[in-house]
Length: 308
Image (cartoon, rainbow, N blue to C red; front, side, top):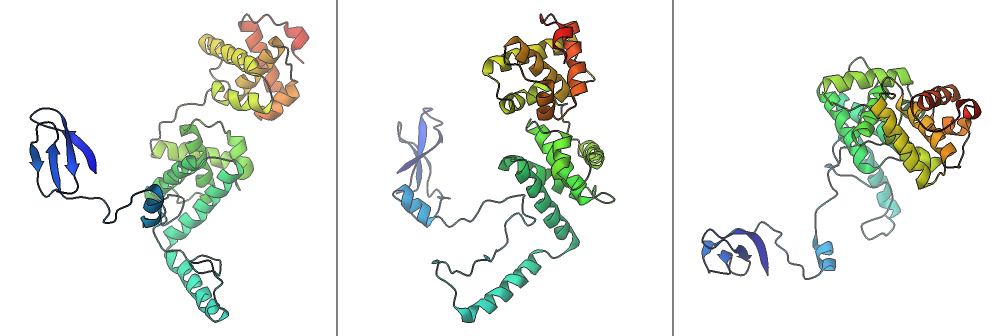
């Protein structure tokens, strides 16, 4: 078996590693580049995918969602051995004591207790918002950076954890508003906003402002509108951005108004109430943003007839 490494210095062809002889040799000109080359792979061999899976002895990947990054030993809560058999009654008391002491040893100081509680809160909020795993890992990393920079002191753990999750959503361009984060968090919107501004400045996250177009796909899907309506709304948002109509306005309000306008143009009309409910803004905001779009863009929509 040969493994491709790099190029030969003499002829420029590919050098291969010969596992049987331990040589780095060019198959074209035969030049030996290295003898007794060290094989840094595993000491076992596998001849198919099933054997490779069975003989692999690596554990679970490292994760930021556990306070010790998942590197410590865990004793399962189920009273079964490695073969899936029930543990005898005589050993259950011993296993219970081992499990209790293991949980105590894993959390040894105040910092680890802080991380344990914060990461569990972060995982709970992310689960309620149905966020993907890589985004949760990013949020956990932001929170760990805040702890290392001593930014938690004087602030609530829940507030900083929610702010870290909101920052991760902004990084991954996942459309989640502060109101949605506040609904699943145990702190109010003002506390999350204050913590977010603080950690983003101190950690220099350099997050770009949220754009109305970031929310478009999600709102269109929840309103069960067609792709034709989505294309119209996207074009309206682009025109509004070129005219400067999005500056100083909430992105969700502009997106909601563009969807309302496109639903009229595509004959898939939705009420302002339903659009406001999905976009988490008030009907007044939808009407105001819609009026600005109609007055400044040539959409061919009558304001008096449709602004209701």
